[in-house]
Figure 1 (tube, rainbow over the protein chains, first blue to last red):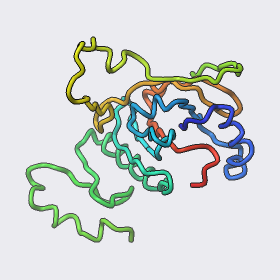
Figure 2: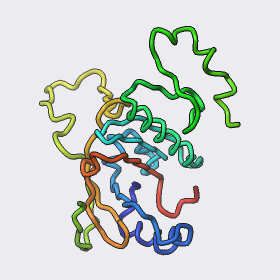
Figure 3: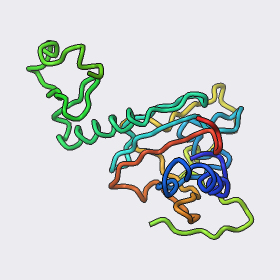
Length: 133
Length: 84
């Protein structure tokens, strides 16, 4: 979503994005003229008249589980967004019985919060787990 | 799902859906401080909105609440043809 019109979205997809992504962008490119939607999500930069690089993860109940907002010159990390979605999906599947510690990705151990884990995280989780192997 | 819209000469726009957050009656006297309301909080419902969109060759209208039941990634960016 950006402040550009749907016509400009089409031109960008036709003339540039379809050269990067085969078949063009597979999801809707939303238009937010005037930044009305961006304003309620807190990402509309009034002085510049554009939107910051905001990314919101919204679950199947419509609940915002996470967001990240960057100023325009720095791009996002798609793999980190995917990792966060995988983590939220795992937590949801376990109905909150499991939590994903720092650095978690699919296949790595989760934590089961409860009285027995208090003060014992150091036994089951090492600092090295926060980093990629 | 998303209804198709005709490409007229006016630029289509969308906006928030439902009651305006500041729909309350305004007091005649201006308050000393402007209340800053953060509508977006983790763990809270995303504000619903509708927006025109370009989607796989068509102009459509998209409403966030159409996607209930699915995981949604909503991305904002400064503008088309920017470099990052």
